[in-house]
Length: 171
Image (cartoon, rainbow, N blue to C red; front, side):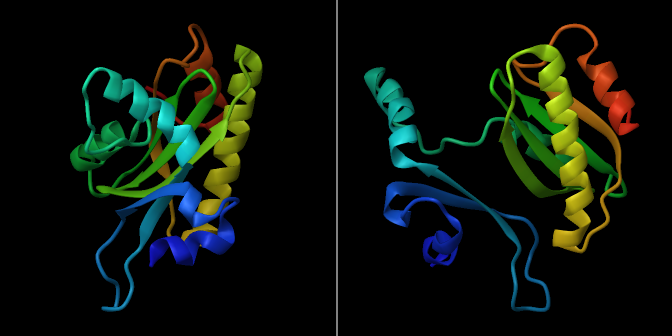
């Protein structure tokens, strides 16, 4: 049912996509479950499956970069604190909003390759997402800190710039 519910919001036909979801919360009022859905074009996924198959690996799961770390951080989090986790690779950043012990949002977006532009774009996208989240979720989200990780984390002052622009400690 989920693919057909998502189809009007997707840029591809559902039969061209691999779609999965992650449950956010249990049923609210007995009739609703919040979840995050992810979709990828099958032709974009094929090279990864083929590369794994070439070394005789048949994966049960492929996941969004950073999701296992985000789930681990959520599991270890203080139930009263919100946390922003950012996974940065060479071309993309993925934001994870952890509210207490629960994952509440995943948002991925492209980044430019040069460090000053990358940091500036990253901060702008994070500010925009932080501002929009309460409107779409009816939840207050006030992170106590941000944690950054990934191959695209630039040497030098990237953490300091993010901390300064978001007024948030960054690890």
